[in-house]
Image (cartoon, rainbow, N blue to C red):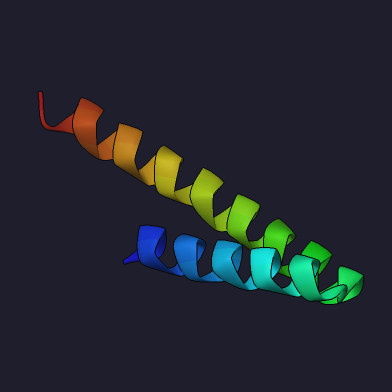
Length: 51
């Protein structure tokens, strides 16, 4: 679910960047980067705890 939201915010950032909305693109890219980082931490933790 978190990876889905990461891709949604990444898409928003790309579209906003294409149309020149730099503040919106930067904010959406920041949110996408944070969500992706959280997703990676949760995913790696779940992989390590299953063993």
